[in-house]
Length: 220
Image (tube, rainbow, N blue to C red; front, side):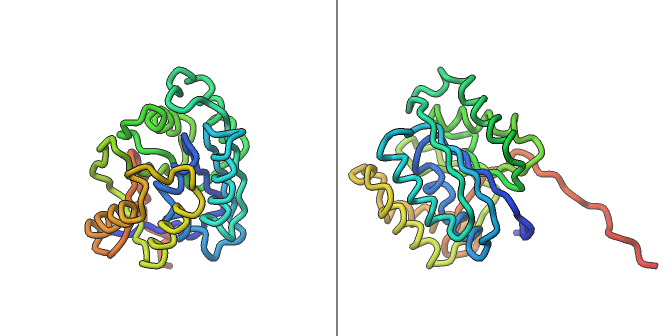
């Protein structure tokens, strides 16, 4: 398995349909990515939850998941479960984010997600962020849409456990859902770790990848 590096990141865009999507799908990657990068700018857009307790949960959660990076979070009030009927608003929101920032890396839902809100956002993001690598994260839920990802971020034991702890700490509105448990999140991370030859990992989907195969500066 080959490794790719993003050592020179200056700006990252995070896009989610609902509060907690980003943390569930990419929380371990965010903890890994942001650690030691106080100058990193994280621009997050969540399409639903504005004016509710879920928005407050998201602000607090991303503050920890992305520490010590600088976080700018926008939470909108589009209706949960009805976003395909608001295609123009979703497109405008994603385009508005792109008009403000030029990220080096984008996190968004993966296009095979069976939840209609996630899937819509996954379809729109690459039509707007055309020149950035987009990592499609997976969201554990009852729909049974886990697939065969192609990109992995290994997680240390400490990072995997910290992700599970922060999910429990910040998203109390989700407590009581039968799938929203520590062992479920760690179980998926363990499965992806097996596929990546590590103990824990998060997995992502990439539709396009540009290669640079040319040789460097020739020797004189």
